[in-house]
Length: 64
Image (cartoon, rainbow, N blue to C red):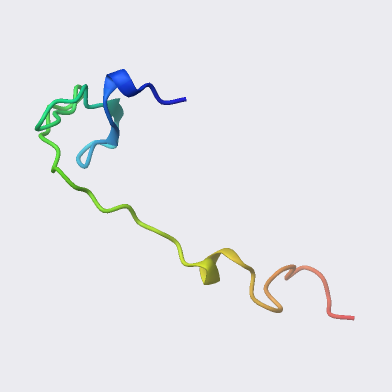
């Protein structure tokens, strides 16, 4: 569970470490010291990439 008094949970753009920004601007990674950008867009998956396509579900089974 996130703790609001620690600020926003972030992932470093350089080393990938997870940390809380402690409500500081700019946020600085405690592991590598890289200054983090204010807004980092999150990658999102489309719903098409999550559902298996027909015929690709079970390649080891034969179609009956």
